[in-house]
Image (cartoon, rainbow, N blue to C red; front, side):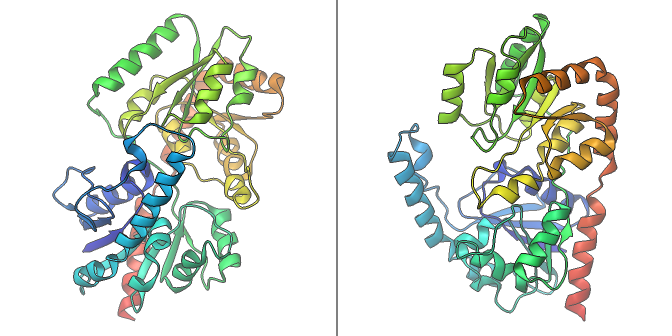
Length: 382
């Protein structure tokens, strides 16, 4: 079967989307994914990219960050993407046939393109984040209400979304589990970073790794404060450089910035760390529940690489970590508690490491994907 996937976030930023597409192909399907600009992430003849614009027109990333100017360039890029996104309707209409399924991935797709391309169509809609029902999210809500099946990455989010959006059926929960490919060829950048990490380990330090967006919604000050006077730990950070990172580097000398690596190269690096860091804090009322009921793919990436985790005590992290005992929940407002929990992890390291692998293996997304496809196919027949 042909699966048509409009997805308007950059593929390299979305490991769950990468996993979904790879899984669909491994199940025997052909995938056509539609992006705003050309994308060459995949190297597989059964995965075809159709861009709505044949040339990348983004301006924001062509210059280094400049306060004010970068913001204006970002707004211009968004405006341009919305104009280009309206080509989606004709592309989808030309691709859809009786042997195809429309699977809209990422709410950014309908935020850019609107919902007219979905009119009179049966489709699956994956929503990665938890958005309140408001004017800003109106197209997300409309697309969810008209979808044959909605898919979200976390159990509590599914029920909150059903209540907020007035959905007839509870969304299917498809966890953001990233696969950990074996024998990923090392890029020169990865090799250089791994050498840095080996040098830190030779000093007798335990590497705490943070991967992902480097911003105040994932505050790193608490862990840096906790390990400031300890010669045992070092915080390594992997992700796109930001003004927040610049601030941290000026204030702390126990932070090691590793740079940014394209998926899946970051997994090569993660395997050389010791502990994975998960921290989610809502910095606005709009996004507070999204943070509390987080569904990070990083929890699976850490676990799949055999890393015990240290995390803040919130519903989105608590139950998995406590049930499988592959990490510790800490009070991030207490330096003493953070340091105690880190010492507990290192003192029972092999137990936590084994449990991390058990947690990773406990979740199978293949069956969930297959169920979603079968359900929409059955609904189409009926």
